[in-house]
Length: 364
Image 1 (cartoon, rainbow, N blue to C red):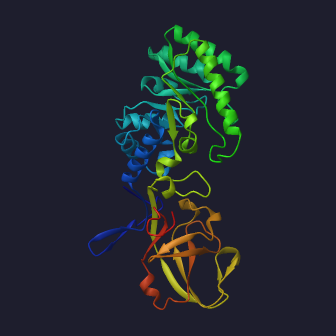
Image 2: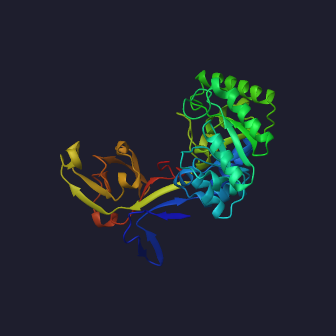
Image 3: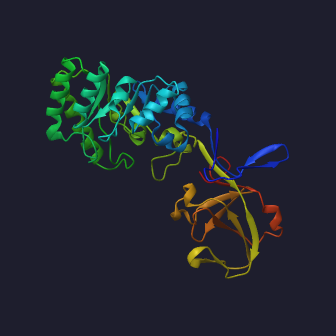
């Protein structure tokens, strides 16, 4: 699956009989399937929720959702109801949860489409009103804030929220499907806060069970906790970053975790020229060549999602990694090819990879 860069006016050129896109993000759905199977095995007997918010982290929500379900994920997770509705419109009927809402969120559509809704507090009455309107019970997951400090009921308000939810459940207006929370520092396994959050979550579950809540799923673990904290798996794990083959841990790469990065971002070298020693590069002239060299122009920049702090990062051309030098601009950046380039024209149109699966020694 390949996405052309959004800003591409003439998106492709012909090289022999093959069409080569100017700039593209190429998504390996087999890598997605591989990663899901890894997490299914790690999490068992807990099941896996594939988090496909933000267009599946830019990988394509519908395609990734289908691949993840094919590979064994049982749930889908999104931030916004609108994202869940787009998946439903594409014919995906798997259980899915949306957890980030505003006063303008379309709870009526969520209830009608059978989308589970995360509840932190204020949303409860709005969801119940939607259930009355749709004449269909809502499916909700109660969220408790165990320490992250974002949404989720405070511990002090938890008992009240659970009680209100159970009153509405007794009226047949909703079903409390799940209880969940989110971890703050699971990507730093040595931090004690994860233990503290886990203890708080267990206490919140006990309060809910004492109130009569009988959930289908309890879920706390994100990608790093799924990998490193089996005691946090409960009934369901929510895998985001790892789904796309990325490591959440500093000092441990994807391959060491058995994961395969799914996206390759590539383009074509748009210019190459030899320059003398001391040549300044890009805005601010923060970089100057240390000797005679050749500069390659790469037509990607911060408008394409390349962070300006990526200066110094590698770009792979013709099997070699070259550093980005100078300031990254809106739509272009420069790599220093060194002084071995003798035929500038031979570099024009060469494939330049910003990142990929790293299998060939390139950036991942």
